[in-house]
Amino acid sequence: MKFKAIVIFFTFISLLCLAPLGACKSAGYHGLVPIAKLGTVDNDITYTNIEGTALMMDIYYPRTATGAVPAIIYVHGGGWTSGDKESGAGIQFIPELISRGYLVASINYRLAPEFKVIDQIGDVKCAIRYLRAKAVNYGIDTRRIGVIGGSAGGHLVALLGTSDKSSNLEGNGGYYDQSSRVQAVVDLFGPADLTIMFESTPAQWLQNVFGTSNFNSDDIRRVSPVTYITGDDSPFLILHGDQDTVVQLEQSEIFFQKLQEANVPASLVIVKNAGHGFRPVPTTAVISPSQQEMTVMVADFFDRYLKK
View 1 (cartoon, rainbow, N blue to C red):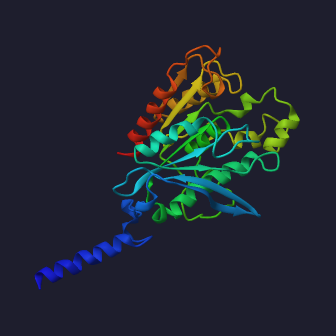
View 2: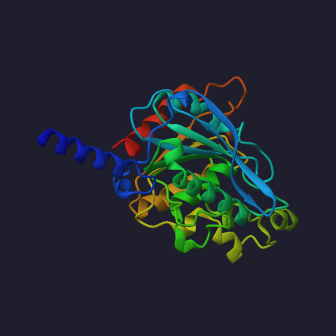
View 3: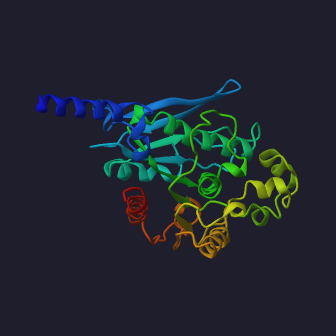
């Protein structure tokens, strides 16, 4: 009878912890990655549908998993007007991340001029909430979500790292019972203080992308990552080329300084001889750190903050 009682007890506990949104949620348990999915990719998964526009992500499953895994969301660049989830500076990091046991979701978001940057940050935040809402399906530990993005994508992930629900940037994609906060951010040469970056930008381009022609307006400040910096922000790793003429290195230097002033854990790596997208400048130059060294650096950063 004693043995039978023990079996019943552990059966009850097991069922409790396997409940999709049950009592073990606070412990971060949200199911396991399906064995058949390990090392595979699911393409074009719809994470929300807004006014007839389906927004999709590609999900790269880790090669191995022994429990709920941390997740990384990759956000592509393209000047807020172009780009795709299958391209951009962050794609190169995915093989290393899945080899270290991360699930990686590469997402698309609505683009300007049809949609503005304020819509785009709402889309990206929705993608975070979707993954938390579907954590049981994908085997994700919702306590351990990081993001990486390049250029315009770097700007969007920086906003994820500094803003919260009180910033009123959540958008209208659904899953509002879930948080869009993230636990680690890798910002690849993303703009941070848009009032400085766009001081000399043509008014029509600003109108097309941001919905305002005034570079110094509240609309521009509202989507500037520096606006929301507080001491409880996510840890940041920022990488930026010293020869970047598209997004000036000054943007990352300003951002890094303000993060430091708020006591946010942050590192700035200046990549020598590198232009936008870490392209060598001149083309015969050798960038330092190298692409491989940056890959290890990024993965080590995520390990530090998402595998504690």
